[in-house]
Amino acid sequence: MTRTLSTKIKACVFDAYGTLFDVNAAAREEQAALGVKWAAVSETWRLKQLQYSWLRSLQERHADFWQVTGDALDFALESAGIDDADLRDRLMALYLKLSAYPDTKPMLERLKAGGIKCAILSNGSPDMLSAAVENAGIGSLLDGVLSIEEVGIYKPAPEVYQLAVDRLGVSPSEISFQSSNGWDAYAAKAFGFQVIWCNRFGQPPERMPGTPDTEITTLADLPAMIGVA
View 1 (cartoon, rainbow, N blue to C red):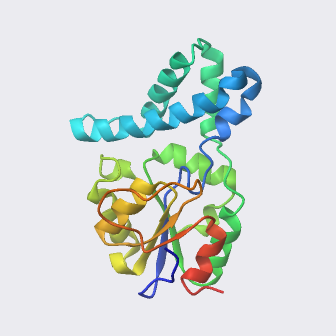
View 2 (tube, rainbow, N blue to C red):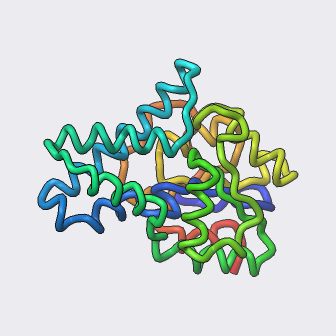
View 3 (cartoon, one colour):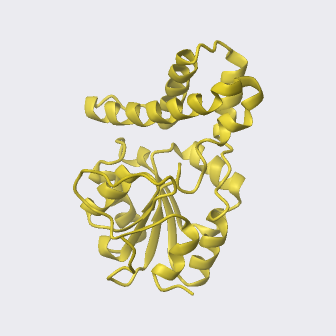
């Protein structure tokens, strides 16, 4: 599933967590405290974070992503038999400073130089996203940092993807959407974006509507795929 996109792209929109920012970075930083459980804690933390966002949307009981992230961490730590309030606080603080993947900033610089609008579209709360963008030093390369808080429902609700259309002023077919989360990539394609699935983790194809247009394993390959040198 590797090809260039069919329509001229005017804007690139990116998922944040797992796509631009490494969601395992916080737990990895606390390996000394978490020991051999760090990877399992990180995996459960991420899984419950996503599950809680979907369940809250279905129940129409919205809470922002900071609360969801904290609730998910509490579940992960208890599941691992860890009761350490200071460690919990450190992990939450580290989540505001997740490291960007090495391919993130160089890729954005190439797109910006090529005249492509760039934006983040994320489940993250505005404060979380602002902290991550600042920590990564990529704010000047972005034309927008869009949070689902503007519509009060999480991805993959179509209202979230519509945010990018409305704020960037381009049609869905002129947007290339990038996510490392397969469910997000498929949902964005079903909405009407052109989609490049950055399949960093070698996930199998999803069994849901909206097969992405193409697939890459690193964002370093993105500029060439949309015609940017």
